Length: 164
Image (cartoon, rainbow, N blue to C red; front, side):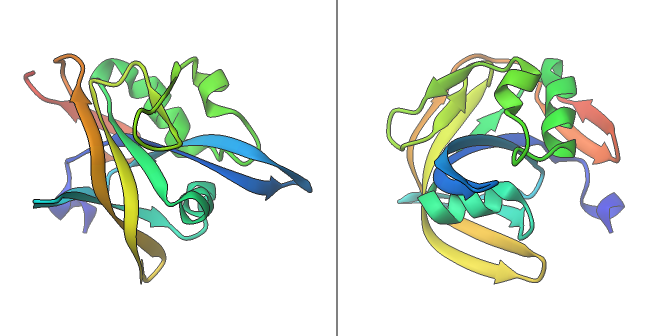
């Protein structure tokens, strides 16, 4: 089926929550690579992401009710792959990838400084869809920081890009 719907733009979603992780309570930031995301409405501006139920980021977004969608350049393919292939439950993905953590303006979450653009989102509805959770959110803030070639996932570890 993925051959039918791909390529899809890959984004990095950042999330933060105060959770118990390995017996210790504390605030944890994480990054997850996602291909399944979409705009839903203009007024109010709404966006949705689909996250696997077993993912650490799913737990963080459920706990905090916020996330940031970071639109990445094809220059960040290596970092995107790392964030998609590793769990943040055991490691700090910002440290491991050397992506720069910035504080969001409208939600208690971080965003990625290297992102071409971002959207700060507050969850309004959560829908279980088989093995994934669909997070429907209001976009509280957004910015296009710079232009660049975006990253599109084709299959496995393979990506393509846009003209600009």
